Amino acid sequence: MSGHKLRNEKTCLNCGHTVADHFCSHCGQENIEPRQTFHYLFTHFFEDLTHYDGKFWKTIKFLLFRPGRLTREFLAGRRMRYVPPVRLYIFLNFITFLLPVFLFPGHDKAKPKTFKEREQELVTDIAALKKAKDSLGSVLAKPSGLTGNIKAAYEEKLRDALEEVDEDLADETRDLNALRTDTTNFDKSGSVINIGGGNVPKGVHSVAQLDSVQKIPGDRMSKLDYVFAKKHIELWEYGYSNNQIRERMREAFIHNIPKALFLYMPLFAFFLWLFHRKKKWWFFDHGIFTLHYFCFLLLLVTLLYFVLFFSGLAGANTLAKTIEVSIIMAASGYSFFYFFRAHSRVYGERKGVSRLKGFALFIINVVLILAFLLGLVLYSFYTLH
Image 1 (cartoon, helix red, strand yellow):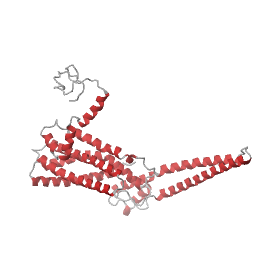
Image 2 (image 1 turned 135 degrees about the horizontal axis):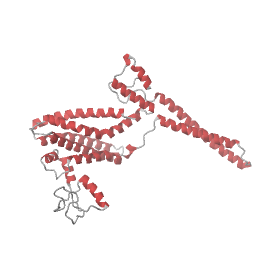
Image 3 (image 1 turned 90 degrees about the vertical axis):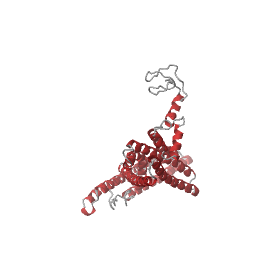
Image 4 (image 1 turned 30 degrees about the vertical axis):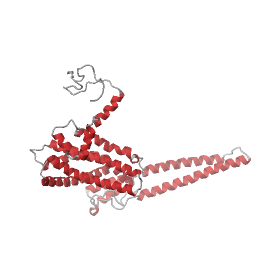
């Protein structure tokens, strides 16, 4: 029951059928006035996302504390009591990856400047200081028309200003020379990612030098190593240090995690399908189990964000860090237990068979997820710009 004002007419605005009660029995649309207050828009948004009538909180409770319950209920046809799994996944996915923006605003801070950006700033500052120095020198050289103590005070002020400009100019010039010296040899001793020993060769600071090394039979790199070494050098030439590359990779990795999870879900369901009887279980059934398990993982990550947030408020407190690590370890253990319990309850096999299949599935998925994450790291590095 939405609580919004119902229409006096009993003809459905959507399909034209007669509406006996609040909802049309033919299309399901609620027979409310088409024009509502702004409050309606606001509440309707949250009702749509969280099923304000109680479905959402009941679904979350079962998702967290009743492994497999939601999947069994859904497959048994008892679906109106809970949020549909696809909608639940979309909502939790949205919350999980939007939450850090509000809890950890520092992660979105301005990125450090590259060498080229810093160099351009220094060049601009030096040009402005030279112009100011020339202006002050020309003013000091011209007759002021002043006499006595006033003239002396005026000239002293000009000389002080000129001395300050000279000091600033010397500092900026020194910084520029140091920056250009560092740019030649900065952080070029190894690669961010070691791909089968594929570090950037020692002494190689440009793509042209790398191509020259590739022509030497004994020093030639594999194609994959060459691609990533070349990418690394291109980032150096653009002006990124190793630390900046790592930071950009971290941000790109976090940004791509939702895509990786979404892409992995069909593979997770596929292995469930391989391990269970095809006549009894459809791929659809495994898909529902997968959606609910991944919703649980997203919810767990969301709760851990809050743990990290409150731990951050405590600062470098040993007790807070200990509690944080303990909670993270407990959550990891619970996710392990949750999978086995949910798998056993949904598929209803003998305990020994269920544990054996669950263990095999868990090992396979851990290996594949790690491979997926490694691929994501490489993809994040290759797509940096």
